[in-house]
Length: 240
Image 1: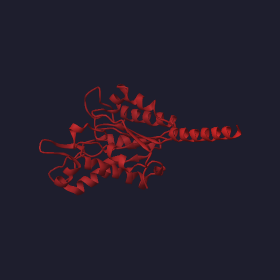
Image 2: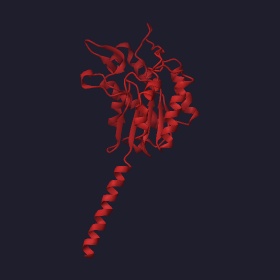
Image 3: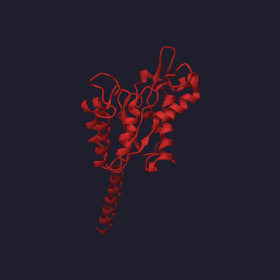
Image 4: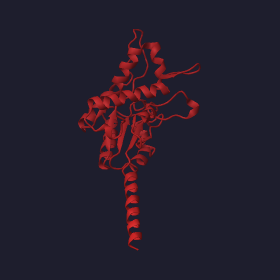
């Protein structure tokens, strides 16, 4: 009888440990637009750099890429997408935030002011995540491959890059400057060489949305920046 009780106690302990490990599994949540989002197979080779990040996380870490094509901070909230994410976030998780491409559009369902509602929405994402015990990370938008006649990339995001930086600094949140790092890489590669990072086929010439290769390389830039310039313990979810 004592032996049975002992075996039962051991099994209960094992089950409790397994349940605890499942409950504390780190999840990396990603919210943003089409430059980050997953794509259906019929749109290949188009991808999003959020998909590329999956190759850089530790085994057991779950990446939930909830970025959505065509969304701004405003529409992401109004469509209920943010509520679905924040209701699922748990202590120890990470939230990667990247918007701007669609916030700058004139459509009233998308548009936000770079130093007003855009910052208010990002601040809300940050504060809500922290209340749930998660770590927020802000990213600036990736660069569009729009060269001028002199081989220089144009500024296509205006004040939305500065707006993201300002709210990140004001809230003491890591800001990974994806605009700067992708700008450097794309500029160095040149007008022709940089096509490999974006969706270029015989029928598509897209200088905004990344290819599978571009997704991996831009995710690598995110990882390098986070490890080099920020003090958060990225080793909790990134491979060594």
